[in-house]
Image (cartoon, rainbow, N blue to C red; front, top):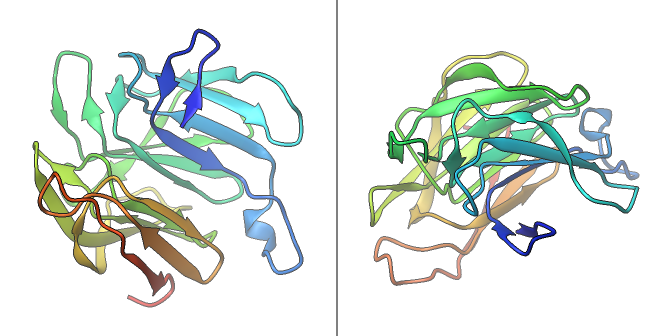
Length: 205
């Protein structure tokens, strides 16, 4: 979550290029963060900032439609926005995946499709080569258990990876070049908040 200068809240996807450290592979280096797919307004804006420099975000480009509940993942050069719910009059979850080149401001390009329309995934993660999208929501209270994956460098549709231990949405995630961790979120009952933290090895289906 971040906040605009006018006080409205941004709830959406954050695509980042991680700072290098002693054990981080070079395919995760970089220092630009990109934001898009937010709830505050029905806008398709993508914005970015330089992580090492204090200051406000700058316009990067646009998604093809205004969407909320989008998940994002990246390697050192490409960022991908996955799923979400359209806010442009065609309300409903989408299976759309779109990508940007993080170093070059501009609008998105079609990447492919998720296996099914999904908003508010439990989380998305990447190891610099493979990207994962886990769980999510379809409709008001239907949570998903599946994990799907893509190869970030190769546009195309998602493929089945495996499952979470239970169906969840609205959680959070993080990863290094080996392991992805999914935490929290809402379980099948939309009023129940989960406390589970679980992990997978990204290279192993």
